[in-house]
Length: 412
Image 1 (spheres, one colour):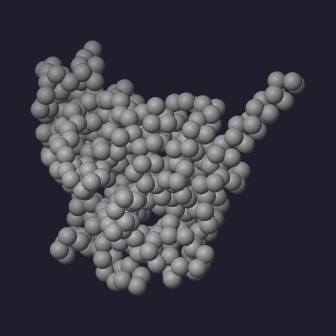
Image 2 (image 1 turned 60 degrees about the horizontal axis):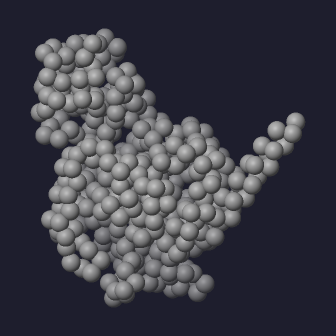
Image 3 (image 1 turned 90 degrees about the horizontal axis):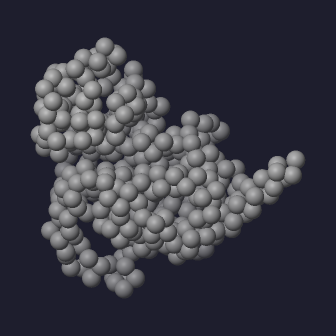
């Protein structure tokens, strides 16, 4: 009896501590009629990475990152959808332009667009949400924004994050705060990153493209979730004061964080989700190939965008994904890939002929989810006791949905 009372008191204290730390981060939604979310449908949150430089106000403020986060509280599922910042859309009062212009317009014209009590941040979030809603034909229930400094401070408050870099990355012209450039490089493999290093990893794009950058940003978000989850509910709650300090002045959201049901719902998802099961989606040439380039803008086919959104919202299922799989021998053991391919085919997977991987010294098996088939990738990872990575293996141009690179851990 006494232990039960003490547990209730402990939970209440932890809730009070967490709520007190995060409640000041909430702001009112400036949109006159933000969409409602019926019970059981999940919520969509627009996450905005803001590029603001107080020392150079003439540069203005713009959104550097746009990611829609779908939270399914019933299925304890999280999905991420990245929108390229060069996407061409209609922005209110401006017309056709890049989608990342919307935040800056709302920021500078907040009072004109939404009323005299609207702050610049509220105006930026509101117009960005309106613009993304029209582009995706998807309700955006809440928005959240964070600047670069806040992003780095959050990771430092966690003590860093672990990132498995899939391939060597070299950017000879990474932008610096003083508008110069510097050469940066990341070697492949798991590594611990502090906030400054993780921010560079999430922002660099000259080594591949804005689409590669979107994958890295989602990878860092997954790493943050993994770090929080590894501490358990109590450990995560005890971090609230440090996270609140890290976010102070750098973060704002229309999520009602003072509402117990909202906090409990988010805690329910956070404590039950497997970071490797987070759905990662993007609007890119491989998911919406019928696009047009207008100068530096990208005009996407509306029907293909709707198809990406449908996939983003759907509950993944191995059978409905109909993934094509290729097994590559990365262990240098003759016949290994053929044997594993046969075993997977017998288990009901669709497998194409096996081949050799570019390397023959791979130690641990990796499942590469090339086209976004998360349910199949997770099933393969469980069967093979393997890690999951998004994208293609280095040195491989696959024509399948999933590539399995076998390591020496598969030798029996």
